[in-house]
Image (cartoon, rainbow over all chains, first blue to last red; front, side):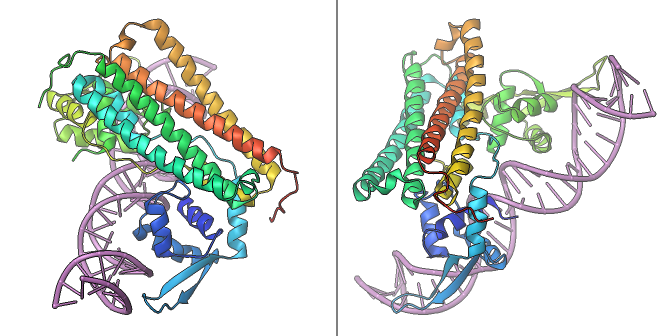
Length: 193
Length: 193
DNA sequence: TCTCACATGTAACTAGTTACATGATTGC
DNA sequence: GCAATCATGTAACTAGTTACATGTGAGA
């Protein structure tokens, strides 16, 4: 009944109470659990979770800022999250626009394709560097808890390692494709437009 | 104006004329360009591409089967595909349910979490094996064209290598997470339901 | 006759994006 | 007064999934 997005929000709230605004900030930058949503999707979803009694909220007045609704998970919410985390999951179909483009890049002129792939490689290397930095922070802060998979610190570390592996793989692949295009003479295909 | 799905279809049709049914078969099993769609999305999209003159079709009668509409790309379609393949592309947010679940798996009991991750590892190793098999076929069939990035064979090979790298990375990560859970005593967290 | 693979579509719904809308409070 | 950040929402649209619907022709 609860959507994947709902579980993403529960997963954040199971670690600490947050407002819709806080959640939006975490999910827009994708730092958290490698899911993504905009505030326009988050606010209605929080209302649904609240209606289903999986979360509750309190309005917190602030001196220097507008009041906010701070949400926390209920016992029912924790149970649902717990159950969902290891429920059967099929292989999900990959939908990756970068790979899709590579599939038709044999039509492109080789210099433009090489430049495109080198640029993509850089974007992913930058993201990789951000993740590596965050990983170093985590490892410095609390190395003991990172070995205990029943702590949220371990779970954060695990998702981060996944992100690092993913970005490294994409970046290397982009480099490999770029190299193939760079080995070709610049005008080996005719540009049309 | 044309959607990513539209370019996915153009990318397939740029290699060979296909019916909606053929495309659905390719995209359901995800063998092709690592995109995915159902026939209910494909048929209307083909109609839109045809309205935009990016593809054209002919009704082909068959002796032993019902007639089909065979689509092929037009010149305009090839130009659009060519242009799109190397147009600027931002980092796309990752939305991966497996990683999302790992983010909340610190709540789960360790034996269930370990079993879940070992099962996921196996699913991805199986997929990896399928890709490796297809890769071996490609390498055996036409090793020369696989080094020339202006051939569709190279593009297929590139997407396949991307899939192989992706699946290997996920499988290894699943194994690493599973190991962490396996090192813990079985009842270290209380199951709730 | 019935099931299966081939073949093409539409309808109803869920998920996600972009744009619109409002209001509080702080600092310039 | 004005822009920026904090804070919460709704509306309109696009993308994608699930279910419904129809029909051909082959083989059991």
